[in-house]
Amino acid sequence: MSPDPWCIVFSGSRLLLRTLDGGVRLPNHEEVLSDLGADRLAGTRVPALITVASGPSAATFGLGDDVDAPAGYAFENLRVAYHLLTRDEFRAAGTARQKVEWYRTNGFCSRCGSVNHKHPEHEAMSCTACGQLHFARVAPAVIVLVQRDREVLLGRSRHFMEGVYSTLAGFVEPGESLEECIHREIEEEVGVRVGNLRYFSSQPHPFPNSLMVGFIADWISGEIRIDPVEIEDARWFTTDDLPVLPHPMSIARSLIDDFVRRTIP
Ligand SMILES: [Zn+2]
Image (cartoon, rainbow, N blue to C red; front, side):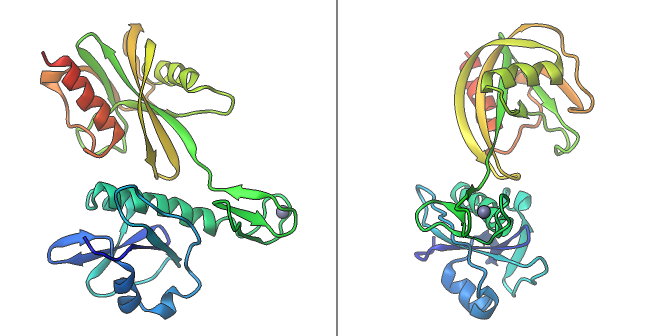
């Protein structure tokens, strides 16, 4: 890994990647300065903190939509980068993406219309007239592994890659607890009732700005009856008959891997 801090550059929603020697990685600050040019970066630095526990901090820049990548680089959609970067690189890039968007869309106060500036202490934009703070928004979502003895309930939505089934997920609505959201989402999507909810873990999910909160739940009653608007198919699977599973870095996959570990004798 480079000793220099990562440099995270977005052109619109596309991330700048260094493509070298058949590999792909986040570029460092020195490379970007020399290859993209200081002129192009001028005035585009996003005053946000991007740190990852086991990686370096990163400088972040948000450029216009139509910048061409210099030789030895490529601009890629974040969903493509998900399959190319390491866990830490993706985590930093995902955080940066959300903060670039927050900075870009909060130049003016949504309360009084005056100009916002980055607050000197808080990770927030602050209104120069009324003082209102504007934090980057995070949308909580639940993601739930439903199990029935030695079976797991997995579903697929139309936008999944071919053959992939995953744990069920949904956004929390205003006024709703995580537990209430789980009961509502599972009943809406597949028509079954669940109980004995156990917290599993959580994961930031920058598509575009959610926090996935993972749970395990036990099936209580009901047969699968899918909501065709939300999902394409849902089934019970056993560990010896699993479908194509989600990306190894996803919390969905962690939930399923954990189920497999607990279930195989
Ligand atoms: Zn204001």
